[in-house]
Amino acid sequence: MSRSDVEPRNDRRIPPREARATLLRRKHGVFLYLRGERRMARRSHLTEIGCIACDELAELGAGDREGWLDDPSLLAALHSHSLAVASAARPLVLVLGWDPDRRSPSSPRHPVKIHPSLSPSDGRITALEWLPFGDLLALALGTSSGFLLFYSVGGDLIHKQFVHPGRVLRLRFRETESKGGFAQDSVSEELCVVLPGVVARFDGTDIQSLLRRWLQEAGSRMWENSRHKLESEDEISYGNIPFQLWNVGKFGNCSDAAITGVKPPPLLELQSSQRYYGAVTVGDNSVISAYRLSEDRSRSLVGTILSKVVPVTFSTIASFSKLIWRSEQSATRKSHPTSQPFAKASPLTCLKDPPRKGEKLTLSPSGTLAAITDSLGRILLLDTQALVVVRLWKGYRDASCLFVEMLVNRDKASSSSRYYEYTKSDYCLCLAIHAPRKEIIEIWKMRTGPRLLTIQCPKGSKILQPSTRFVSSSQTPYIPLEVFILNGDSGQLSVLNRCVV
Image (cartoon, rainbow, N blue to C red; front, side, top):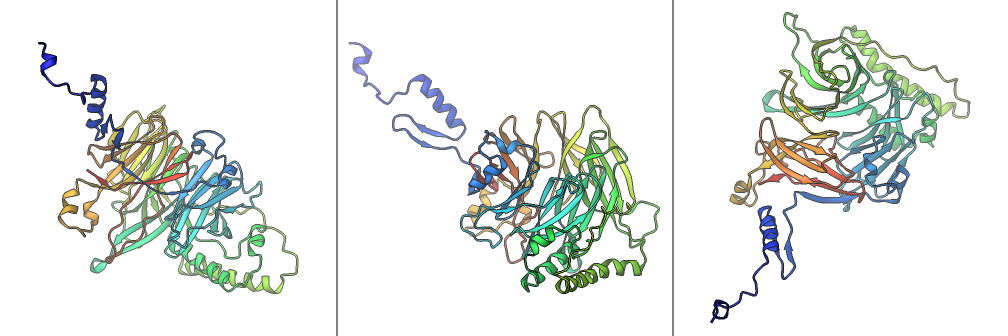
């Protein structure tokens, strides 16, 4: 009698090839039952939160080809419940709401089309950014001729101002925290406008004041058809917003730049009320350049008062004159505005390594770290205080980087208390690297930590981040910095989960 006749046959035996596949998938956290076809998928690190798919996206090229969102002429800016998409090839901006529950009043129920009235001298759209100030929200556009335009969520033109001749490369809106007395932190906002070899800074209080004046006049219905009138005029009735302008082109024109924050004054210089800022630029001639920017406070007290009072006075006079002389023809248009003089910018250091060229730059929330991508597929992590490269990645061509705050190995804390609320100290600063050629997103722990995650993402995806996080107070839990992934082909918007086990 053979051994096979004595021993019972195991009908549940898995062929060797299928067994190897099962073991391989179990290694990555997937359990597969071959006979019943029951599967438990791998733990997802993304959470779907909304969808922006609509017919209006076809006007921007959606559906023409796979990966249409990779078009460099397309610009995108994300807010808490709204997404703005613009095209440099055509004067069109779409404001889309992705919140399915419409929990935010700033989330439009239907796509809003903004058609900026740009003359040939105004150029085309080259930069896009949201300007959130609590209950106030506006959309900023930069043009290839150095103009800055503010629009409301409804598509009304609020303000138009000339900054400097040249193409607006980037608009950066940042919230900065400063330690105050009695353990109170103050939050200030700023808008940084980047042009080739030039950086401009707008204070958030000045922008917020202009938005509130516009909101008051719009609420009182003093204007009829104001949108068409403002778009047909070169001079906006609110006057110019004061700003600082610096020349940061000593080592060549920059392709991207950022103001990192307040910087201490140089040594052997008298302490005064003058304020200094730090700036980092990247470009073709110099991979990295750093500057100390001096705020121009050499104006007299009378000049300072005039710079604040004249715009308001001009706005009031212009408002009454439009009401009285509405039926008359508008005055002859003025010539192209001239740029204001530069404030002092002192170069600190630069890194030249031809043929390497700096491409893009992103700042950490505190401004102490900057991730820089170059033309050779490398990513440099720069300490903006010490001006030292502290880390280097290779093999990431056409990559995009964003800083994110993650919970690393925090399951014990959450299991010990059911209602445990995480604080700022529980989160760890990480860097999200999107490598479109590899179709992956990697999460690396800062500054010298390991790689925590590798997430597959479809072709044509784009990583986005709101210009500011939700404001958290002592009564509300801390809200970390998050990264969103937009799938251009499906229109699905997802957020990266905060917890990493």
